[in-house]
Length: 358
Image (cartoon, rainbow, N blue to C red; front, side, top):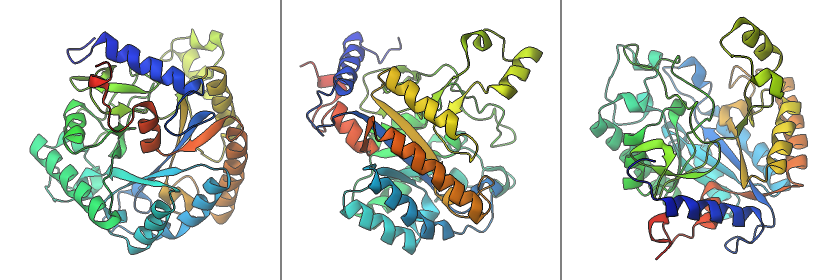
């Protein structure tokens, strides 16, 4: 364990999560484990790194919100700079917050979030990671976007996901300084090392050795559980391969062939082709008695042409057909909650991991 870990704090969190799963949590009176929906709420087709950012996808979020509410689920919209500045999105999100039907948190893309501090020859082309900037710039960007969220939504944001999944210890400490209580940047079993940001950098974060279940972060080593106030809620990714396939080295020729037929990771994230895999993830989580599962998608993926994945109206309709089936099955076993609600259910607001034994 790292220097910021106490055995008691880790055992205490495990006990609380077990209590949550065993239907004994009093804070929200959940009768089941939690189905967490996270939406990276950002400009249109950010995969293309557009120089001119548009936010037309804000007009498509109402359909998704209505579907969530039909099943009692509560999305957390992790919101970046251009969406904060979009009047249509602000109107939509304020209404959802007012009705207690959703949460708004922070999602930060470093190259287009103020203050503008050039890092590469063309930041809009390369999309550098926030963790590649000097710490002082990282802190100022988090400070500015947090302030804008507070100003436009009249609430204090407490949940966060890093842009392009890039996270490290410095970033985690800055989040704690700004009052964040939940992070969901960890993508277990996935490495972004080969995904460049700054061309002279080392790539993104390698999550292959990170936990798959919720844990309070060790701010000196975010791969380990610690006694900070920042709860990590990793996105749900599972290895659904049979045991014989898992024994084949992934880098070998047989391993690559097997991975084509049976991918080594299955996300709770729709692609238009993976409904069966997502249903297996949900059922596996039920079998394992996980305290939560975490779904993710991007706001622009609800708009035809807003992403490389869903280009046409027909593909969007197929997405919603898959979501309807996934949510119907999930609602049999899971209760809806925002990230903040789950965090408060595990540890009430007035209590932190460090003082929970006193």
